[in-house]
Image (cartoon, rainbow, N blue to C red):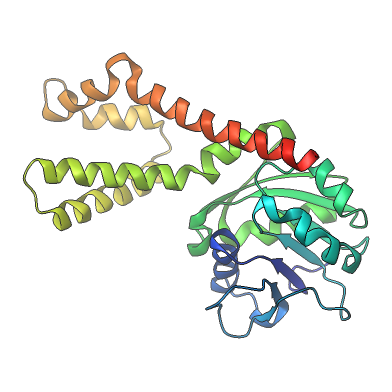
Length: 269
């Protein structure tokens, strides 16, 4: 099966739309993509948009489920009869396990869980993958599908997906909050708010690019910036005191992972 079509994207909200823009930005022909979403607007030119699955036409090579997990049982009855054994089903639904997907979509032989994050829209995202009953071709197809979106990581155990979702799936929102907090702190020291926001964003962007290229642990990079007795070290002492920052992030990710577990329980019925 080739990844150049046909591909059905079920839902094109924030994450589904980011994946769509990432695919097209990487050169995929929009004419090979069918978006099924009754409410979406403003999609790239050339993409076919339908309110419901077409009653006839080519069986999709790949179906990407990108609706909210709570809408799964609304979408499945109309979609499941349209799929075939040779269709690869890829789900980005947080917390919905493969067993729950197979109950609703019994026909596809290959089922893959994927957890992308929002920077997929610019080809700089992270997508975690886990699949069952995938032969080499199915595994390659899933990886090829998401490779244009950024880093691809296969997860060995499905029970780790809640952690992956909390870390990389939800992570961009947590980082955006950190950028906002840095900007607010700069403004509290007297900088104009708009200038503080620009400085905070550029600092995070440049530091992330440097960390990605360095090949060294982030802790080593931090210590390299924070010379003994300097101003950076004084600030780091606040962050490091009592492992406050680490404890905060552990609690943040734990809350997200717990919510994923709740969604999984709801999908099991």
